Image 1 (cartoon, helix red, strand yellow):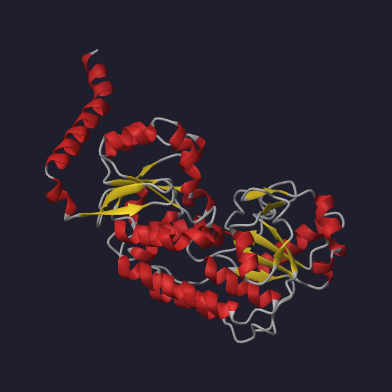
Image 2 (tube, rainbow, N blue to C red):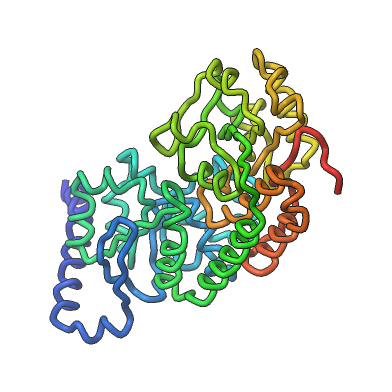
Length: 384
């Protein structure tokens, strides 16, 4: 019985220690101020965070892409836990990370905070310096006790956003993480490349905007078709000089379009997103570090032929069906997708753009793995 009670009391004892630490910091603010910075996070909250934190929990696993830019020598070194959905949905990336950084296998794992699956008890037990969540988790966490408990324990919580409004929120999110991980120079270098890459597209855009359908995770689900509203990849379409046909149809970030509506709209260009998902569903469009463009092209062909009316769509008949790596949707690399899509939409205006070179530069200058694989493809093979 005593052992059982002791086990149950441990989280409370840890919480008491954190509260005591918070009180001591309040009595000696000068000692903390030299090692901390105050930021405004993407939920509009003013939060004081440690500069160069070494015990962080990532509440969104794909934040690892940004952390890999900021801390390429070992993005897992400053982590004690994370939501590890890369294991299931980004298997090609996970294999590379696991091989190079074996410590990743030993990190504590967490469920999705937006679904109420984040373990508060486990987080307290790890005694982190800070916890980073995606803004999509804000409504769930704000309505529950988690934020109050973590703040009472002296654990800073910050929200970033690469998902809901990335065009507006990406730069402040990268800067916030740059400060948390003491990597401000690398954060600014990435944002400079992003700014230059987007400006190159904007300077060449013609007035006409082709009508575009984005189908997210094409073939991963049995029904057709999931898409995006006016933001996320929908904003990629706009920045690339296209007209996202689902922008007014879907009020949120994501939603489903009825197949008959798509046939009636008859888009000029179709872009399917794909990933390393063949272990989940063999009809999914393969994209990523272990894929060849020919494999994606074959998967797109099979999907189109299996759908009633799709072979007659204008985009299909013109060969203007393309695939993009799905992870452009929730990483700081969306500017590469903007250049690639702009070149598909406006080939003459964008003739001198080289998104392939941009993607290689991103890997060479920022990431701890190389750029082999296929991250886009077209239904009709493009000239080199």
